[in-house]
Length: 452
View (cartoon, rainbow, N blue to C red):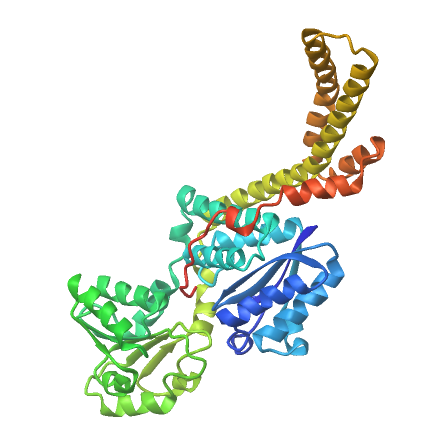
């Protein structure tokens, strides 16, 4: 079995496609279940953020796997296969591992170096574990990605190479809107990304902050927390947003809505009613977008959205830090591949030792029948000697074959062992099944439902 990933992201697809190719919680669960029901896949994990959708699977057939995973992504993301196909990328085996580790380190993010993708990877693994679609292979891979991502952020300056999407987005507004200090801010939404935006604005020194959300209780909790930390904040309902727009200098919107939250007419009306001379600065971090793209054409409105951020982030990375992270990723990919190749031979080695133990047991039983007068001490000594001889004979070849199996092309050594010792393939398969932990025993990854 080999890891295959099929996906699309801001690097391959235009925003017009990305904002329609979405996976809510229900669609993601059905996607994973359908992927496991498909013949090529034995495991599946879906990584879905506002800038990418990726389906990882452990497959036994490459071409069939690509066809099936592509079809499933189209079916559950809401974009037809013919339209989706030109924007899909495919990575297989070591390239799939390299891709996920690169994503985890923030090298494939819209803003290079941002760390929120780690929460999304953690979330994807947790869902796969909960639905029992993440087996040993993908569990190991995603846990490795989380470790490598944390290592990249702790051992390099990749955090300096880029900024969080919120901070970077606000920075893009600064030339037109000026600094946030002393401004009045409106945050639409109360999820993790909106909460991060509110906290960022509070640290930037806004004079007051208004939080709007469909569920006003969540807005109230966020507003209360901001007020307790020293930034005056209040909560409002979504119908009150139009009035709040007239008073705001900065607007950040990031909701889970499937349609527009603010139309061009809403913003035109707010501008007409405003007394402030400065433009209304609007940051749209939602995917699909919350703010009507026609607002780019409005006088008095400066709009920065996901599409604009994608175009502006090209100069964010610092080359030395990026190169250092890439070196970490390359080394970790090699180590992961060697460990996986070595692990694949373990069931064969276990089956070989089990067969040897059966042979020893059979011969000792035969000896008991032929030499019934042996006393317990003699019998124990013979038993220990026979077992020691077998162990010594098997020790060097089984240790060496594990080392050789860790090298590229090492899978052939397991085949050689099975052929040379005439091992029962069913016995090897039984060891593999017994050695595969249930999802509950694979470790846990606490869900993180934020947008990244």
